Picture (spheres, rainbow, N blue to C red):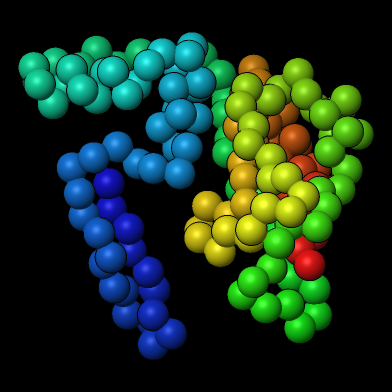
Length: 145
């Protein structure tokens, strides 16, 4: 696992190098891409025994992070006011959703890189997952107050 950032002058700053699986639901999404295999258990077995049998990829997956949109002049004490278009997107794309953590109205805004929630999608093809991600990013709105 490695995290790096490009500075405004074009140079690179390395923020972390660690012998660990990636966070932010990336290993969970990868597990879904490999038939639902428990890659957390595989990681543990690798660390303890040095053994790893890579599973074949069976699906395309993606993680979409939900970040609340601040109203004009919104401050650090923002709370989730509403989440828009969930019902319609669930009706149209719900068959692709394998995991979701949606924010609830009244919850404190989470300013971290993971945001206020996430949706993990799984489909047979990359194109199907990419289209679903584009729809969610364009239409799902977490409004803050």
